[in-house]
Amino acid sequence: MEKILIGALLFVLMMISGGMYGVYKNTETSRKMLRFLLRLHLFILVPVIVFTIITIVPEFVHAQGQGDSGSGLGYLAAGLSTGLASLGAGVAVANVGSSAIGAVSEDPRILGKSMIFLGLAEGIAIYGLIISIMILGKL
Image (cartoon, rainbow, N blue to C red; front, side, top):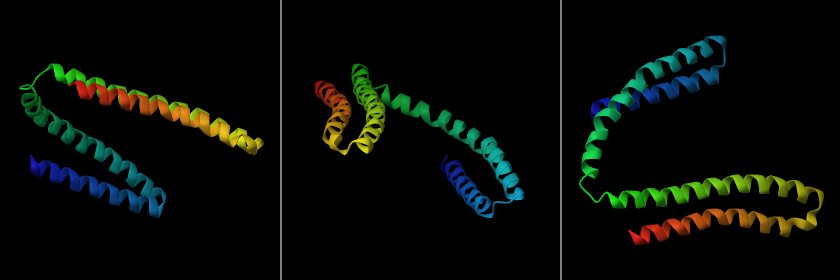
């Protein structure tokens, strides 16, 4: 198994170096070479990764099956609360931040107000983190 992973890692490093050479050269033949290397990469590396996942995952599942199954849902809930809150905060900060930049460029006096709204948008992620800490405290 280790030999397969080392071979896959060497193949990825070879792909990166070939891609950097092709981008640096930037000719028609280098673009064709990049397309060929990408196809070769997809046809060789993807089956190796699938094979690795198929052989490694049953060992992890067997090892995890011996514990308490009720705590798994708690960990899932904690991860979802943090992840979804961070995703919502990212969307809110993107909208509020772009609007704040536009508003401050028109009137610099409203910088403080826009920073308050930006802080409120970032608070969403903190609320999700607090909820996940509370869930993990109950496990």
